[in-house]
Image 1 (tube, protein in one colour):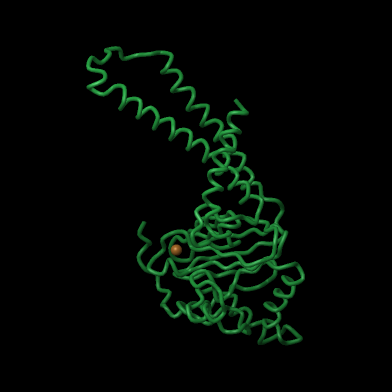
Image 2: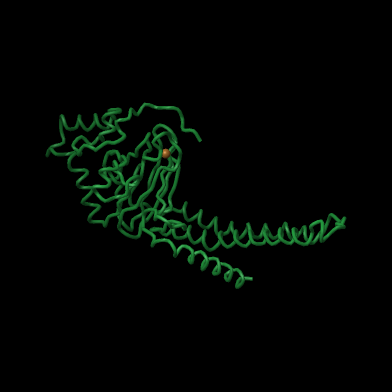
Length: 320
Ligand SMILES: [Cu+2]
């Protein structure tokens, strides 16, 4: 039975890879034109999820589909009016009724075993090295680093002309990336400021809703440096398609340098007294709209805003 199962799994995977080989080589961290399989992963959880899909779910669904198709063909060919003019009258068969109850239950148990294992792995977050807070707005993201004392900064979509000039993918690239260190457990607290958004980075294997008034969390540990893209994954209004997530995974020294570059401008004076402390307090108090759009970090470089000029007034809840 085990040999049979692994044989089926191997056969399905050969067929699967045979087809995907037609597509261009997968790009890491972003979709590939012409590709049909799942975006490759850069975290253990993502690899596990892809394995679960390709080795467990895909063979199961393939075998079930072929089996049902075969039954349909037999019925059509052998039991049509011409070849079977006098139909049988019996209506119960205990053996077959037990079989069609027990076999699906066993199939579901096999799926549940691997599914729960993956689910537990997702929930079993190791002690995180750091926490980032990601807030979904209509229609951009805000990232805050409480551990590094980096106040929230805004990440808009990079306009098409700028993306072309930089040679980065339009609709995926952002004005400011989310920056994290490599080989470290990063926890992302996700919430929404206006309507429900969703934070998703396929190559990390993470997705969670960004719900106003609720904090969800995901975690990841990326195994290589690079740039990885995601999107908002919950229909959140007219510019839903225009709030990409760009993640830069840096080596530890590069990450530390980035943190330093983000934190320095906020404290230019040698002595943190008087006016500066008041300014920091004012920023922390959260000047609405304009201050938020430009990032509370007063000294930070102004964000080139594409959509931030849109009034952030609350609108009707997203249609689903
Ligand atoms: Cu959205």
